[in-house]
Length: 153
Image 1 (cartoon, one colour):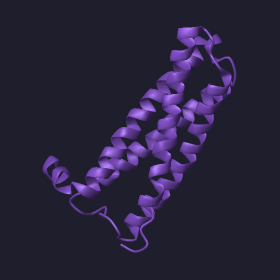
Image 2 (cartoon, rainbow, N blue to C red):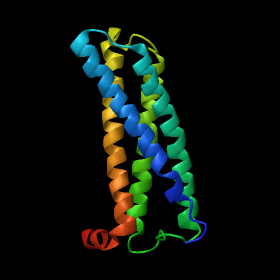
Image 3 (cartoon, rainbow, N blue to C red):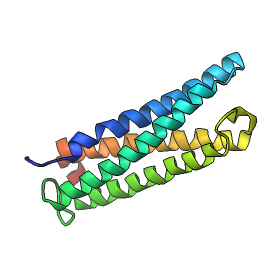
Image 4 (tube, one colour):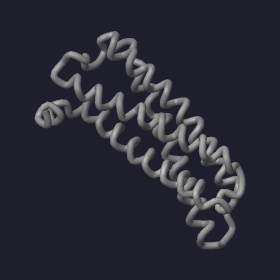
């Protein structure tokens, strides 16, 4: 397994996007509990999302490189369709988190003052993180439990 890069680059985007999701939840819960929505927490969410998005792109690139170099499952193998599913979901992650960054730039401070933008931001963080969990589970299954995916078809 010399030269495999994807396992080295996959953990940081998961951690960054998890941190973004958790800080967004903390921002919301704390704001609702105390009526004080802190901009620095919201700014941390935006930073973690931007960094996570960049590392997702790096992870996609290294994953494609590893597959095309023949280190993992090939696209034309029986499990190859799961690679396509994973790529589609990863692209959706990029789109969803890009939508978060696009919407959140409209209100870089005092997000709670615009309910429409706040709803967009909360929704994209939730949907994006659910997709991260699905892609993580799928990647884990491709590496450690391919027999289960083969049974699923």
